Image (cartoon, rainbow, N blue to C red; front, side):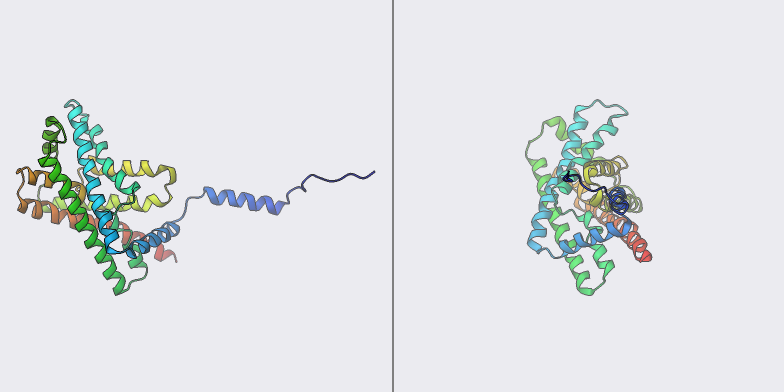
Length: 279
């Protein structure tokens, strides 16, 4: 009497080891070298984009960042003036960043890391020119978007009067103290934004949470961000509550330099160093 064997043969010990190894590999967080290589690839793609694509994306980002200003004003106007109010309203600061980052729009402060890593990885003068070109195009486009949205908010009553008054109050609270302090606060903002860019490639389902937490910390700590802060400052300029000289020299320039130093020196260079040293 013969029987047909339909059952699969038992797995060998080697096959089980391979399966376990694959499962372990899936659960292990990627090392710094993998994150670095991923961002280098993203940076190379960004450097290869035409100026027109960068400009339109940067314009969209500048407009979108205005929703941080609007959301924070709406929350502030809706909540009572209590000691805890700031802990809630600063979640509004994250709205613009969520739109920009999830929408893959070009934000200047993100570019203190993404295109810089390819430059550090393989320095050439051509690549340096590409990075500088990207910075200039994106920064100008961001600022045009910021100016347009601030102008609309200042001249068109799209929001209720109490909210418009809150916009002015928030703009006045943008730190405009001694220039060294503004620079230092901006360096912290640039540091946090670049850290966020470093964390996002493998954040997977936690992407939204990473964006909210790090940008919330920027808002809560009053760390100056060149694009988000410019929305508020230009609103004051267009309503006559701020002069251009003060905006430029006491806020814009030290904040720009601080954001760049925080992103480039504290994140890009340090992470490049740890990966390069491990090769």
